[in-house]
Image (cartoon, rainbow, N blue to C red; front, side, top):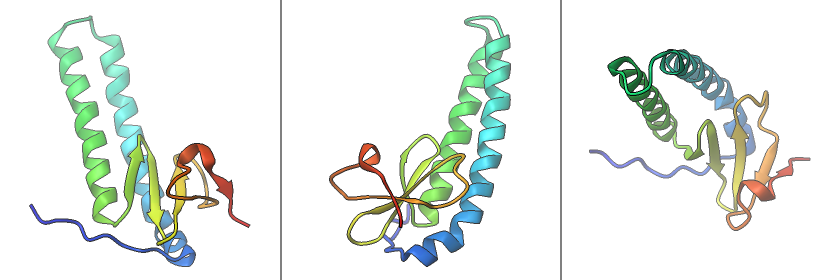
Length: 115
């Protein structure tokens, strides 16, 4: 498998690709939610429930690979970071814009609003 090259983002560059990131994430969220609804309506231990759970994992895995292929760091479910060389611009679904930053050491809990 080909290694994904690390990318360093400017704020303008990260904001320029955010529309694509949001569209891909929204599609994955909708698809995962559909499978979760199927899972939750199926009987415990049933083949339908197990299939739905596998499909949710497939959707999340595909989304993560797509984000990594764009050069983003996947930090959690529907949460990505844009490495800028001194920290991260941080975005989480369903935020409308890229408006937060955190240092390498702080992580999500240390997010601050970009001025």
